[in-house]
Image 1: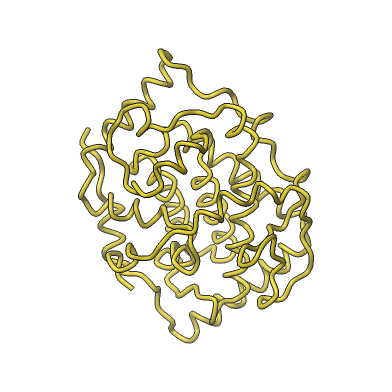
Image 2: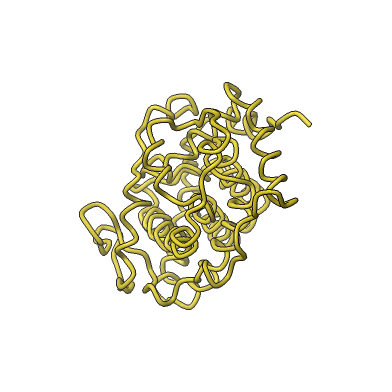
Length: 279
């Protein structure tokens, strides 16, 4: 599937908006076909609420207006305006889509293999469940600070205008998307260490896409990475996660042995990742 074609697929916002109710859900052993659901079609994470990193305890307050850090946030946002209509804007729009199976292909170019529910069911399930844990780790700070998003302040366009009302009611700090993308990058780097540089680079770009989209400040993205890393560290204490990690490693090796290629246009993705805002 090409980068352009992927953009036509809808994003499942419920993956972000409904997981707040998961705080009491503990992980249980699963089979790929029987994920524990918090609601139909929305799997639970691996971790109970009290095992997640506490973003409010871990993070400083977001940069205050008039501070040097806030000025940097504004400057990064301004530089992103020039990316509208470029391949980087297109990739950022695709990165906003957390709907599976679209999101499952995010790192397919980086690992140089297909990631699908049919051929890599345990890896597919691991990515879905890790998404839930990573985004939940951001909620306490998001709900406390209720930081206004860049498009609300600078009145400039965003790459997913259909989500405007939803995002206006969801705090900007820290970035849940970034926590998810960085958690995925760290997990996949363990599963496929020979591709770790490409995987981590893609995880970095995934988070930066939120600034390109004008829906997150630079500091939201930086702190989102911390929450993603903290979530993965805690996941390693969970035996179900460790079992899925081992199974996913074997699945990816089998897919490579079959010569199954990435599900995305990797040339287009590489070109988009190379686009930088003007200095």
